[in-house]
Amino acid sequence: MNTFLQILNVQPNPDPDLIKSLVAFDATYVSLTEDNPDLHRILPWAGTRYRVGPQAFLDTFTRVGLWWTRGPFNIESVFSDGAGNLTAWGNFVITSNTMGKTLTAPWSCRAEINVDGLISYFQYMEDTFATTSTFWAEGKKQFCANPFGGCVWF
Image 1 (cartoon, rainbow, N blue to C red):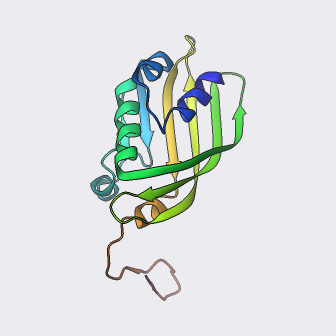
Image 2 (image 1 turned 180 degrees about the horizontal axis):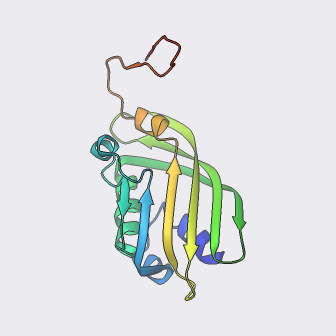
């Protein structure tokens, strides 16, 4: 569990040496979505980085710091099955560096720790509808999700 907590806490200030000591050379990192080309256009790190290892963590953590100014990152709950599978939930505060919009959003994360005590799989999720809204410049968006009719405008 210590490896998992260390990687969660190093996000705001990525330390390459620490990340390399915690992540397997062939680890897979899933950031926000398995594959969503539209989200990837807004957040270039979004998607699955198969067997890239520590570099995926460094790239993601560094880019997030360029897109947003990070506020508190809170870990509220952590669970382990005792066999190397861990999950955690919490919330964070961010302010977009382009639009100056601030919000608090929930996050969740799942990790697999291999027999060497290193992260071999990492999946990080957050409320991307909220976080990407911090970059919304202007204009209206229409969402038609209700199968019984009606749309919502923002």
